[in-house]
Amino acid sequence: MFQGSLEEVKLPDVIQLMSVSAKSGCFVLTRDQAEGRIYLEEGNIVHAVCGKTQGEEAIYALAIWDKGQFRFDQDVAPPNKTVAKPNTKILMEVARKLDEWRVLSKRIPSLDLIPELDSLGHKKVSFNTQEWHVLSKINGVNSINRIAEMTHLPAMEVAKLVYGLVASGLVHLRETPKASPDANPLDNRKPKQGAARSPEEEVEWLSNKVEKIYQYSKNVLGEIAHSVIQRHCANGVKNVNQGKGISAVIEAASQIVKAAQILEGPEKSKELTAGLKRIIKEP
Image (cartoon, rainbow, N blue to C red; front, side):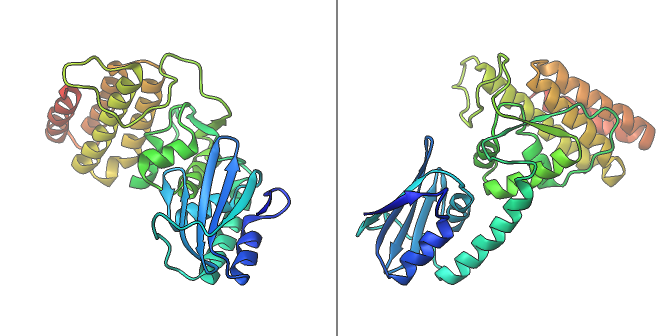
């Protein structure tokens, strides 16, 4: 059985070696509690899995592991086939991802680190839809890997977005979750009908309201107020995560309405107010 340490031999070199020898079987990679698998058929990669990620993205996620153990179990058949590209193209893409990771790792040494929002104050901020989707999941509890799962984005893409937020001074990174009543990782489960929400579900529910306020306000007011909307919604998410409850959502909406009155006048602000009230009152 072929096995070793990822600190001594990097995954791309191992794959290339096994490709040349035309082996069939499964690479099993372990790091702390995490595990990944890459399946080969006659030296060609046909399937990979890392956590909930499958296919090429799983290979790229595993390629940046700089520690852990690997072993090759010969003649293990893949449960599925999710990779169609030839090994040469995959390894070229792995090399590109590793170059990206070398830059990212200067500020984000691990995808298990936990981003947390800093106070935005009166900073002018501008996020695209994907950035906002990631930012709305940042709460000082969810790791970069966890945010990737929640947003259905590759972990490396989330890391790039977080890198930009860290470089802009909008986010800092923690090694451990913050200690607070809402400090358990969020999940996508919804409370049963008639059941009280758990603290985690309450935070997720309120964060989703802020995201709806962001989308609705952007549609009503357009680009002229985009940076203002983003700043108040980002502060809303931060305050929700600090346990300020529905009042944080109401405050974000109120500040956007005040800005609309200045920028667009009473008619537009009246339309905006009616829509935001509906969002706030939604069960």
